Length: 99
Image 1: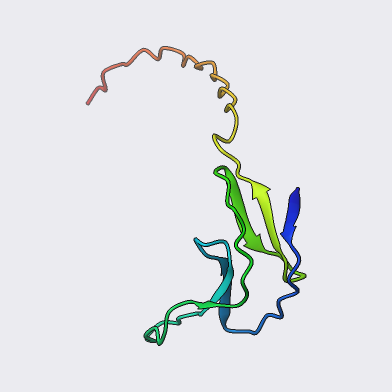
Image 2: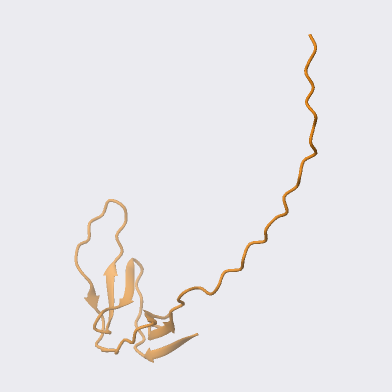
């Protein structure tokens, strides 16, 4: 499914969002909760300079290495919904009420 691109062994700390930045380096930024303001921008963790190819999703896996996976595009063809046969109701003859 995913293939490793660079072995770095990054240790994760709670409260941070880890990602691969535009230059191909692993980075992290503090997660913001409701009512909080961002204190600082992203912090680069190591110099990896991975060349990114279009059509792939780059991420930091559980072992702390940079990995990539092919992006799912289009989602495949959808199956046609079955057309339900209309059920005809019996014609009920309306009668006038007598008073």
